Amino acid sequence: MPIEPPPTPWHLDLGLAQPGEDLIGIGADLEPGTLLAAYRSGIFPMGLGSRGGGVMGWWSPDPRGVLFPRDLRVSRSLRRSSATFEFRVDTAFDQVVEACAAPGRKGRWITPTIARAYGELHRLGWAHSVETWQDGELVGGLYGVAVGGLFAGESMFHRATDASKAALVHLVSLVSPTDALIDVQWRTDHLATLGVREVSRTAYLQLVEAALRLPLPPAFDTA
Figure 1 (cartoon, helix red, strand yellow):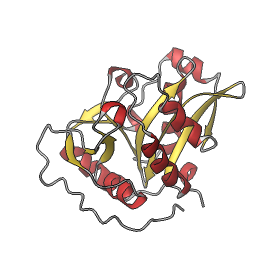
Figure 2 (cartoon, one colour):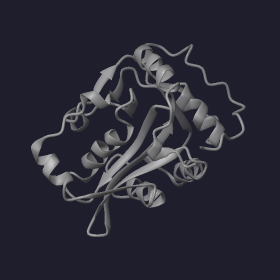
Figure 3 (cartoon, one colour):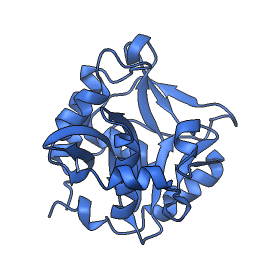
Figure 4 (cartoon, helix red, strand yellow):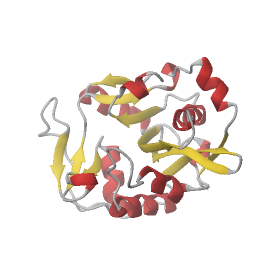
């Protein structure tokens, strides 16, 4: 089982968040206890400055992008591509984060501080990578935080066509057939093709509360 870290000294509260506002706070720290308290409250961190630098922002998008396993849509072409890949879990976590933080990526926001924080969460058994391999090479993947039946996706990358989408499809297979909740933060056109939808913040918090009561999927249980 994951190791529970010391509790956060910060008070993470969505009580003052206004409908339609995504940014709900600034500051705090990235200690494991703070990160876990945030995810359990429907919040995640991302820096406010250029490329994720500067002051740390805390976000709870309204609306929120989510994927329910039952909503997954896999095209014939993606199914064919997926058959050419090998999938692994947690064999290259740091490499996945490094690839997601590559300097040339458009919209890059993962700083060395963020990478270290999630690396520590990984070593405690809370953060996980789903990896796409081809011919012995890491060609895509994603990473995120698993708490009960919630998988909060943080970022994904690909170096081969469909490699990141295939990782998300494999993630769904790992959390099914439970009533798991996959959080993707914001719905994009790219993710919508896989079945990602938007829900209000109020609805998302209710979904998180239910998901946290579910058992951790076996793939992410490090016991």
